[in-house]
Structure formats: C-alpha cells, structure tokens
Image (tube, rainbow, N blue to C red; front, side):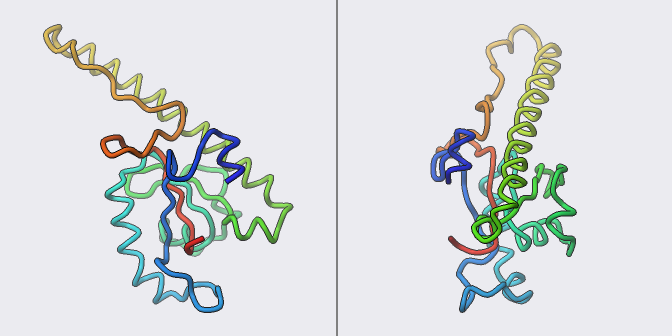
Length: 171
C-alpha cells in the first residue's frame, strides 16, 4: 500500500486488485495447477468486465497464468507484455517482498515502469484522438477526447479502470 501511495494510487479508489485464486490454499502453500485452472475463468472474467488499460501481474502465479508461460519473474520483468490486447507489466508479489527486502527496489522500479507505460498510453490516446478528430466534420466537433487520468484512473461505475493488479492469492 505504501508503494502504491508513493505513485498516487489507493486500493478501492484507482486500483482494483484481483486474484488468481478466489481463496487461500491450506497452510498458505503455493496453488496447485488444478486450483489455478479452476479459478482462472473467474479472474479472466473480472479482467474482461473491468477492462483495465494496464495490468500489473504481481507474483509468479499471476504472471504465469496471464501470460501462459512457465518463465521466471526475473525473466519477465522490465518489459511490457500483453494480455488480451492489454499491456501487462510483471513484478514481485507483495508477500515475497516482505521476505526478500532486497527485491523491494526492483519492485519499485517495476511500478515506476508501469507509471511511464501508462503515461505513454495516454500520449498515444491523445495523438490517435487528434488524428481521428481531424478527419471528422465540423458538425461533429462537439465530441471531446476520452480522458485518462494522469495515471490509473478511478474505478467509478462509468469510468474504465486504468490498472488492475493481479496477485496469486487473496491478501
């Protein structure tokens, strides 16, 4: 939560956190492949309904599930991936960071990368909107560009959320 606050984000306001599993496995163990398979449709439906503009996959199971890979977190970090056409950035799970403080700086870099990616998406949207509006007749000039807030817009009823954080199990 502190890292989110440092980039002007708050759970429930402008960040939606979804989980690969809908419940915590016994003994807080890693989820089994069949558990991930059974819960994945729920996660994928949540993402479909929320329509995030950017996804931050937090942890190995989130990244591997969404990217359909068995690659390590370290090999997936630092670049933009795609899930169903939505940009996706991979970082460490918050519980992992509590046990491995040295990787907290890497996760912070991933969040800063997410902010830069979101800013790039906003710039691209503005450019595409300008090109589109130049081709529209003057009678249609009453339309305005849809807005993206500076980073990760609010998750109100009629607004699209800009980022979804996906982790492996419920906090």
